[in-house]
Image 1 (tube, rainbow, N blue to C red):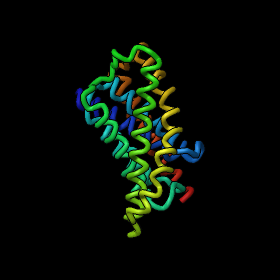
Image 2: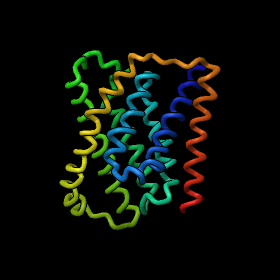
Image 3: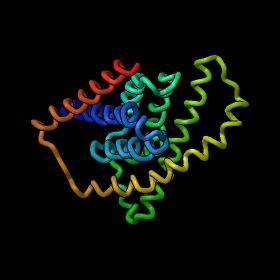
Image 4: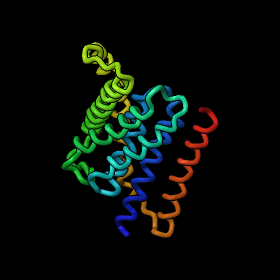
Length: 210
């Protein structure tokens, strides 16, 4: 039963992450904000609630799969999907030894914001670099020199993600005090229903606008 809860939780947060990338992404128009607010929120919340390493990578794979159904997201959606999964993998590496993200040593807002700045920046820039490698490779036009030329721009673009993370993590950590729990009879239909709704909206959006 616990394993089923975990899988459904992974499906829920992964679907919400994919929804933010595909549906909200064009409205927001900035990938750094998406990572610094939405991706980071889903990654931290899921680790806090389920206390399970590896779950976030699964979420990234689900979100990355949904990114393929982005009708206006660019020329290589598979590459973008892989980059999203890479963001989840980077999160797993950063917080490998922290199972539940209680973060009891991060009492002050300053420390919490610093954590948000660091994690959002590394996750976003890491995913961005991977995208810039995979997309040219998919078109047989990858040159290492071109990547090095783009590096300063990629590093500087992470500033917006870092600033977003500075506010995101303190807010997410405050939700720990709410201690909201769903009973099994509500948990299963709620997680399945929200996940299914995300998939239906994304696929419908793809069919209409592609």
